[in-house]
Length: 92
Image 1: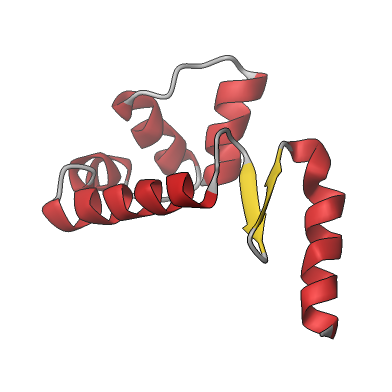
Image 2: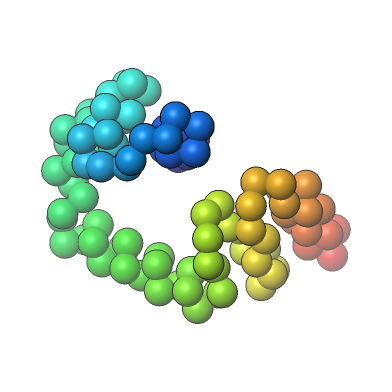
């Protein structure tokens, strides 16, 4: 789903609205209307706020960002560095 969202936003230039999220979910066989309805569920809202707070605490400032071993990698072009950081941690 995240790939579909990023593609819609950065390749197709679509705004990511609730309607678009529902459409994207349906395109990959998910319940689009159920997904949109779940966005306002208290437990989902709480998880979103916790995730957002954690990202801010980690120093995340843009999308896509990856945090590996406390280091923030920002941007799709940093994926090779993310992979190497994961390998380095795994080999320790």
